Each structure stands twice: as structure tokens, then as C-alpha cells.
Length: 164
Image (cartoon, rainbow, N blue to C red):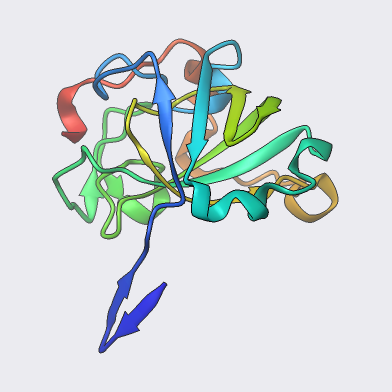
């Protein structure tokens, strides 16, 4: 990553391979897509970074939401019908369009990570991968804001064209 006078440049380490060609119809969260399969093809320059990854059941995948061309600070998210500040949502129309997906690692074959829980579009650039470690990543909380009355909808909600 290079930083130049307020600019951050990230270089993808790989790319997602998915059955989803466009954002429309794609699951909005991995929790609602646990059976959806995908792959991450890692660039050969980053091969050494995969050492020991097969020891983890889940991975945190950080991506660039490359097909989202809009930046909005207020959005009507997929699970609601009223506007919220983008930082109170998981909407893709963010200032830096960074996506976060927690996926289940199914197998590692050379430079290809097969996973389930796919909520990503084919060709999505992967910026980073981190192991999911419950002791580090799980928090018990009672306060989930506007999501509380709508969270059950994640299993059936699919993206529509509102975030293009």
C-alpha cells in the first residue's frame, strides 16, 4: 500500500470467481448465502502469504466494490425503507467502497481458495484476507440499531439496482 499526500493506493492480491455477474440478485451478506460457493484466485506474487491458511475454518475477506460507481453518505439500505447514514449501514456506496465478507474456507488448491458464503460478484478485486478468530472477532451485543427489527430478512434479501 502506498500513501501519497492523503491518497491511499491498494493493490489487489487476487480476484473473486463467482456465479454472480452483476450486483443485482447477489446476496447482501454472507450470513444469507451460506450455501453459495465461490473462489478466490490469489496472484502468484502473494503465494507465500497463503502458508497455514488451511488451518482456519473462516476468513475475513476485504474487497474493493469495483462495480459500485456511486458514493453516498446517506442511503436507503436493502433491509430498510428509510434513509440512514452510510456508516450505519453495510451499503456498498461508501466513500472507499471497501467490502467485508466472512466466508467459510472449504479448500485450498495451490493459489485458489474455495469458499462458501459468497456475497461477491465475479471479478471483485480482493484487497486482503485475514483469519477469522472468534476470540478476537465475536462480540456479544444487544444494540444493533435499525437492523434489530429487520435482521431476519437477510436470508432472502438480494441486491437490487439501487446501489449501482
